[in-house]
Image 1 (spheres, rainbow, N blue to C red):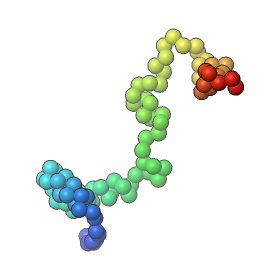
Image 2: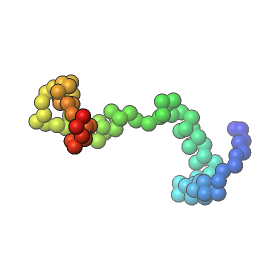
Image 3: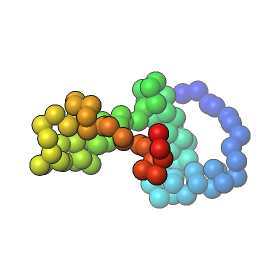
Image 4: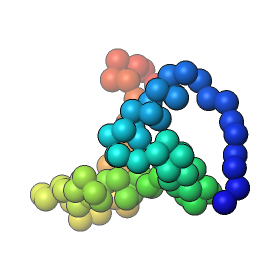
Length: 88
């Protein structure tokens, strides 16, 4: 195993020590785990897409009595986002 030395802010050092204590492991193991996770996340941000989040929340398909073409018919978007008091 190779040794890596780096400087971190005091607050981060304290958080690292606290996390290691909570997990009953070494600070090095916590840092290795975090670095491994960072290095192996996808290059597109590593997070979930908006679709993934919406599916997890159960909000996709939650309109029960809406029109069948709600997502595709442009007439439902007429005036959307316009200020009602505006004369546009």
